Length: 353
Image (cartoon, rainbow, N blue to C red):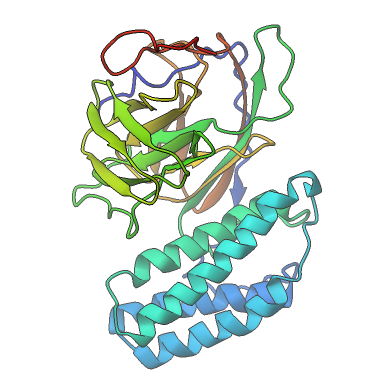
């Protein structure tokens, strides 16, 4: 894989990578009891592993039985509260909601004998569990791991303003791995990611995806919008379309795609197209979680909207032995905003603000 030199962006004023490997058990190799886990989370995790074991044999009855356990234990899990990081309770609630939605999707796939997407849904449930454990469990050396497969890479990103003051909100930093090899390729998401046009802005503002992904651009506003990009990675123009309509575009190459609306100059979104699924977007505390990473040597790389494009930001790392690897880093913003022109290369007719 070619290095992401033209995208791995912001200047790191101070970069301190602190690695704290935690040697853990292999999730499928042992049935070691996790005594510091809540009983419902332990039963939920074991049910996921049960589905994993039943998948190669196609044992639908076993998978449905384990899914019933997921549903039963989920009722208790959704009542739990975070042990740490209560200031980002919205993130906690989003993760709980996502686990519930994924469990319902899994049941529907199994009932309707649509097995092709089952492994990806199970992996999404697993990653959501791991993310929640890493961010909100207060104790236990194995925090965040069970029922993970492979290694976990996690940590926090500090973001400094132009004046050196630390930002309280540290979201929307993309953290990703380079150098991940897979000769057969990685599966694309079973559902198209969405960038919505809503309240005269694009939501989300930052969207990392894997190359080959198709993104939907629904107009969820009450007014007309336009979606275009002049980026070399993927230039396109979806033209003007009305409320309630949606258009789509596929992104076959890695790179940075800046998306604008030709009607409203404040509308900006950034698509970061990567060549593997091992990436994460930081939350408001700057925390990121990348799970299921195979053993190997990689470059841990970051991208930030207001960073200068320079040809080297990354840290060579090696992970192995089913470990949790924790990194902390600090990055410096180098600009506050980036003005852009319309799709004809001209200034917008009204004042840009």
